[in-house]
Image (cartoon, helix red, strand yellow):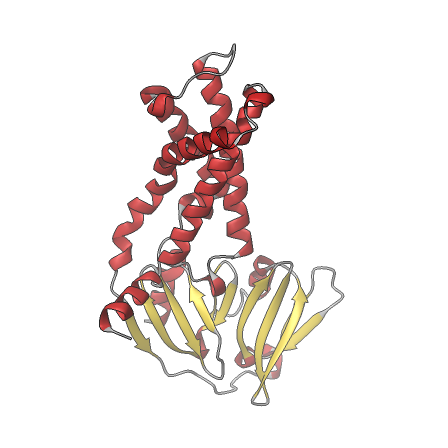
Length: 288
């Protein structure tokens, strides 16, 4: 692979702050609605016009409300399904794909929103669809891409690499056994702190990655990652590095990344554990 292609690949898959519309769908939808409505009413771009007997402001208010609801649903789906950021690593590619998907939903929703405001008989044709679709995308691209443009300066943040000497000594006493219970208290898991590598949220379950007798052990408990964090809060070297991950800091062998977030390698483990941008500074302080 040529140097130029390698640099482009590194750039496309480098860490990037998540678009506010996706990171906080409800708040993002409100801001999206306000920006979209104010922009349309103020500038009236692309010869947008009122529908039927409704006033221009009411027509735009209804359109913007419907489109904003669809945008929020699309952003929520992207956020909750992790479809563009496997292992919790949000990248420039993830950002681009999510923006494109949001614009597609906005364009389609604008077309169907017209059925609420105008006679349906006049809308069932391809020219009307493409007209509504293209107008919505051209107008919606501004509030959708504003958060991305604001964060573009992070795209060129320099990555660093730091290695660590993991603490694999089983210094825990019998009294240090950790007991984890499921939400319904029908499942439980006991382990020593030195056996714990990390825990990962999988929907309504949390998967514990352990090392026991020099062999990997995976145990699934029905519970939320927040509840598990509470149960592990007494162990100072256990940290929630990401909304879906809790890691044993003593098991870290290296970190790669920057203030936008890190990717952690652990002893006796092939998985990569992310550190989110919000937790990067705390992580740096604990590991210094």
